[in-house]
Amino acid sequence: MQNELKIALIQTELVWENPQQNRIHLTKKIESISESVDLIVLPEMFTSGFTMHPKKVAETMFGETVVWMQELALKKQTAIIGSLVISENNNFYNRLLFVHPNGMIETYDKKHTFTLAGEDRVYTAGNKKLLVAYKGWKICPLICYDLRFPVWSRNVEDYDVLIYVANWPKVRTTAWDTLLKARAIENMAYCVGVNRVGLDNNNHEYNGHSAVFDVLGEKIDHIPDNKEAIEIVVLNKSHIKLNREKFNFLNDKDTFSLE
Image (tube, rainbow, N blue to C red):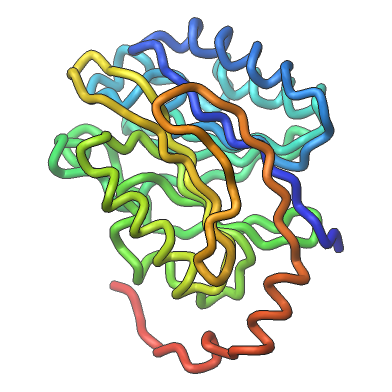
């Protein structure tokens, strides 16, 4: 078991509906990370931006972007996580991929599709939570709009880290900041949010506000807003253990079932 987990958060602009250009852009950023890290986190739909035109950008699980993630994970000897548009069984998914350093892939399909933008009309929602076991850490990765639904993210599995990849517009920044902090506090887990910056072709502006909160809701990153950035943050297992044993809040959580 590894006591520390070093993660690199990539807050970046995205080229609209252009997977090739986004891969080129992100390759430069990932290769610029000179120190060894355990995990690299990319935003939601990092190959296209938050598009409702999946046919233009969809790939398969054997497509160029999946291979690209595997090759980079192997080369950098790190895990890489982010979501993209995947076509499978005549459906489109906003699918998160957790690619291990050895190329193994675990996936999560976004459960809460964003009805305000019509995501529910073009993408098939997932119904299974993903828990990734990695270097002695238990990681729960989710996608953007999932952040508004605390029951779905409730820490009933004793996970250590909650990760949200997002395309979250500037106009709702207060909600993003507040909910990331709340998810950390209520679940007594590190909460990581990686958001994009820039303007998309729907004229939606994104200002980043990527962040990392510890189990007490304290912000532990120094990521600048409104511009591209790579931030490396170290998470500490002892911090989780110490505070869970001291406060025992999770022991008093409610039991419930999801339908």
